[in-house]
Amino acid sequence: MRIHGVSPEFIREMKALGYDHLAVDDLVSMRIHGVTPEFVQEMRSLGYTDLSGDDLVSMKIHGVTPEFARGLREIGYRDVTADDLVSMRIHGVSLEYARKMKARYADVTADDLVSMRIHGR
Image (cartoon, rainbow, N blue to C red; front, side, top):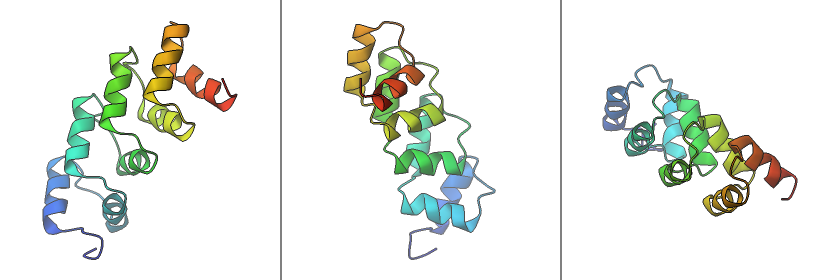
């Protein structure tokens, strides 16, 4: 735990955020992949209040940032799930791409964006 930065302070901060039943492996994984209390708080401020430790790690691994989620909200994607955010990043949906497709197809959904990237559109 020490090698990866799982300090008593980190554990206290995560407990204060409601993550009081995380296994040692979960705490280590969170530290390895850069899940911080600040990241959790930023995602919560965007409405992602029920994220599991695995959700948080997956988001960090695949490049889901608060800026990405905020940018999607700003262009009209208000109900995008954590899984959808991860799927979008896995398949290369950037904010620029989402804006471009939203301008071209006003009713394009998050699932549509992923499908369009998968199929090279």
